[in-house]
Figure (cartoon, one colour):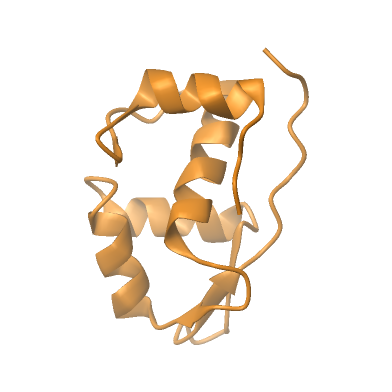
Length: 99
C-alpha cells in the first residue's frame, strides 16, 4: 500500500531519514500520518506476523519498538489476537485535511 497524499509526503520529509523515524510528533494531527507511514512499511495486506517478528521490523524503523507497537494497536492500524501472538494490518483512519 502506498501513501502519497500531501500530508503523508510532508510527514515523510519532516520526520523520516533513510527509512527511520527521527522524531514522533506530539500533536495528533502531525502524528497520525507518521503512524500511517510506519504501519504500511511493516505489513502487507493479508500478512500475519508474530509479536517478535513485528517488534523486530519496528526496531528497524523506530528506537522504541514496543511503544510504537502499542500506539499502532491502540489506534487500530494494527490488529492482534487477544494473547498478542498474531498481528495483522488494520484500517488506516482517514486524514482530516491535506497540507
